[in-house]
Amino acid sequence: MKAETLLKEFFRYVILNICGMIGLSCYILADTFFISNGLGANGLTALNLAIPIYSFIHGSGLMFGMGGATKYSIYRGQKECKNADKCFSNTMSIMFIMAVIFMLTGIFFSEKLTILLGADKGVFSMTKTYLQVILLFAPAFMANDTLTCFVRNDGNPKLSMIGMLTGSFSNIILDYIFIFPLNMGIFGAVLATGLAPVISLFILSNHWFTKQNQFHLVRITPSFRLAGTIISLGAPSFITEMSSGIVMIVFNTIILHLHRNIGVAAYGVVAKLSLVVISIYTGIAQGTQPILSRIYGYGESENQKKILRYALKTMLVISCGIYLIFLFSANSIVSVFNSEQNIQLQQIAETGLKLYFTAIPLIGFNIIISSYFTSTEKALPAQIISL
Image (cartoon, rainbow, N blue to C red; front, side, top):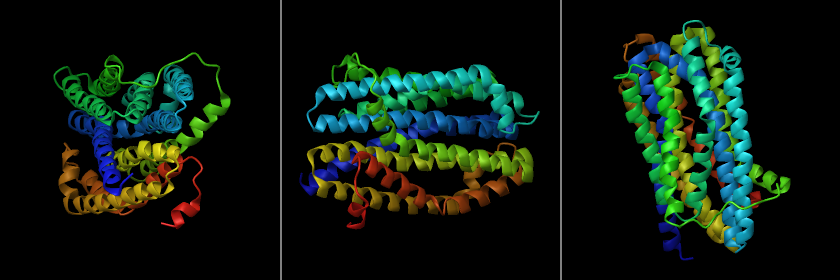
């Protein structure tokens, strides 16, 4: 493949996926904005205490989506269509089992989880409500994450982006309706978030109605070997999201002892904005993944390294722009989420933004390199060193 053609395809996939992933991350950012304006600092605290669980759900969905879609693309590149269908069917099966576990956790253990996450009496009820509903919607979140990856890798990145953006915009509209005119409080916010992937799935269903899909559900004998491959290929995506959740839990625990609920609310602003930034890097990684998997299937090792270079250079340029925005506009950005004009919240969040985002390029580098190894299965470190 010529360099110009490869570069054009790279930007086509990457731009569409960045837009889609930003839209997907706005599920939580919209909650942050509307909850801060409708429920104040306590609402922000409850959201930040509960949101790490969303990271585990989203990470699991991406693990099955990225792992399954990567193996699917490799099979398609090798012209093994039957194995590609088996891969899709196995992915959906194990994804459903994991989603049911999350649902059962929400039904039976949400109160214990709320206590474990550190909610006090002032925010306990709101934290539990958000936590329970987000777990009950786990099948929708995970199915949306998984099918978005498969639709994108099936040659339809535009529909994948439209699905994510439609879900995000519907979440913003429903957030406003449920929190303000209907006065549903934090339940309205989490209900809007839970309905967003359902709407996105309706959009993605066009891939089947228009008969563009090349993957199908087939009767399978569960393959533990294939399931292990899917999980191992998707593990980097899961680890990235899970680590974000763990960091939030640890920070929440520490900050609760230092600044109580106001500190957690301030950290919540930083954490939610970081999710949006990380989604940009995930968009770059997911945009390169179908191209890398396909050319890996073709055996084009030189083109694999070219795609990696494009991805890293794009990440560095975006990182510089993002940091400059937060460095010079921290005050204005935090004010958007500080409806009560709490001075302590404002000061903590501003300082946090400027410090936190100095390290963001390292996160981007990790996400892109992890995706590279995933997309090329067992690529050797020497490939990276030789760049």
